[in-house]
Length: 271
Image (cartoon, rainbow, N blue to C red; front, side, top):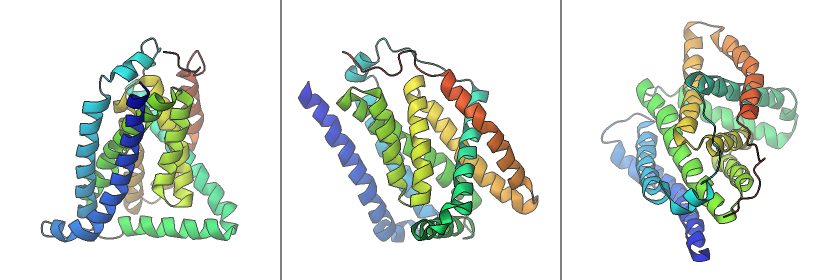
């Protein structure tokens, strides 16, 4: 049994290394190949995310879907469900948390040199993605659709389940996966809110047992923030209105997280 669990440790490590190495190969080597099909700045990133999505989907399907160890762990675990409108409200609440974090950074933490440098790096990365003349459809497919699919498959589908099998502890799976999600984003100011969001995503995944739910929330969070920012160029002020709406949704997010709380407070798993 122990040897079986060790397999999941090596699997998670191997896929984490694969993700980092593949991104280097994608941008340094495969970029020349992909530019034969499109000169769009996001096309290479989109194709790379598509390849990773296929790899992670295959691993999730063949290793974790109907996995006997997971089935044994979750045999008597009481799941909760979320309706479609609750998923929308949760995604807006997550956007509100992100807005609060950046407000704190802009007003207070920016005085710290390292934080300021991190914020400048983040803003430059965002400007590169939004002001590069990239095809809008490709940007949405890459930044919203494939990002949600690929990241949720890797972190919730593979890392979360691997950690749960290894530790036999739901809290450890939720917290460690969230922290890994933050570290994976690299830039400090982005990594902190990504870690908070990652913990929330993992909590929702653990309570619902449905990867489709976190994929939907992740997609909506990315999609709405992108679309609203673009709409603001046509209708100035809509971005501020969206921010206010998202701030209002934060207490609702907290309510739904409380609503789906486990009755046993994530007590240690016994097999």
